[in-house]
Image 1: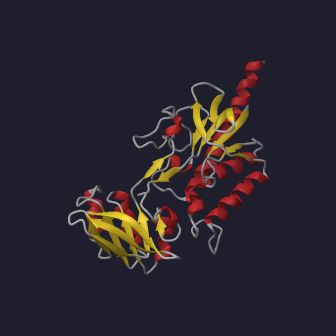
Image 2: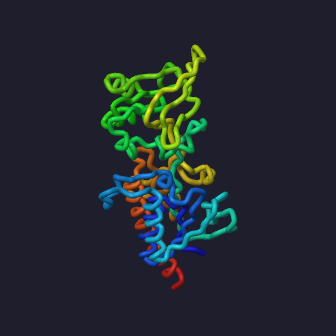
Image 3: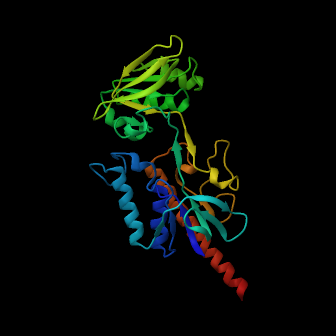
Length: 315
């Protein structure tokens, strides 16, 4: 039986692994289908402290992984298909690894950005297509960008992008926006934002180096056109990776894990959550890493108290 298993290997999971490994807790990290998390899709990270000239996303994740391994963390490749958190030790069914038992569990499975699934989208992530304005807006200083979406997050990111881009075009497939009135008004009052409503994105257009346009269809006239742009930001929401928990952990209505305020503790003693799987507001590498540290310290304290309790019972 393991002392602690960490699900997910993004900034949150790897930070938790570093702290727990240094505390000689011998953590096991189940990497999942995308080792390194969403940062492996980011070509340049310029806002992570300590890197004056920035660092490549995959390189940052590889460095964090090596740091955890240096202190004794063990990585296993697999995908959790089933969990049993109603009894202790906890039981995890992992593809390719079978059933693993553990005294404690850290959930850092992240949240996946929703994509349009149109031609040219996935293959141009990092080449002009982004799902994070806060992460990548700086790279489009003085350029023309498109943001796709009609909710609050799209309006917020559009306003943020005007700090850098010369023009921001909001593309939405309907005439009406889903965003709150106050967020709509802020966007409409911004002179750098223009609108392409009632238009459906069809294809990301790119040359051999980068994105150069977005093909859309006018839903009224059925005519197609290409909106010229230097970048495309997809802002249609995120999906927390919690479906495998089958309702055993308390979540909000959208699936994000609820934690006790000021901690990373979930409703089940011995199970902790960190990173984007419990954070739908900030979604930054540095905040994920911070909650990863918190989860490790919460988990370490839990295991120490459990050991004392088990010892006293044996007397």
